[in-house]
Length: 91
Image (cartoon, rainbow, N blue to C red):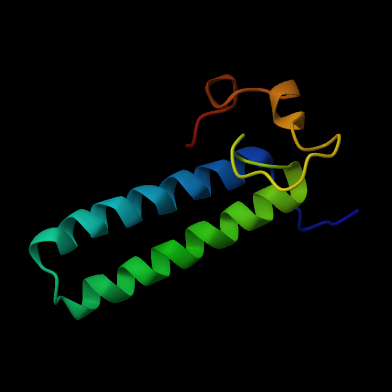
């Protein structure tokens, strides 16, 4: 088994943080569209978020019901697991 496997709650927390960072940076760019530092930060947060989502989906299955690949028996296993509000909070 992979010793470096991150827990479901760790990955969900990282996804939430990166999503928040990207949204806030995007809002800043609404009023400062040529700010190079903010543009670079947005790219960094989007990459971080996408990588965390990919890792989560590789380990635990689809993070969202829509957009899940294929229609095999594992495509909808997310409904059998705890919902986000039933999991541990980010600390």
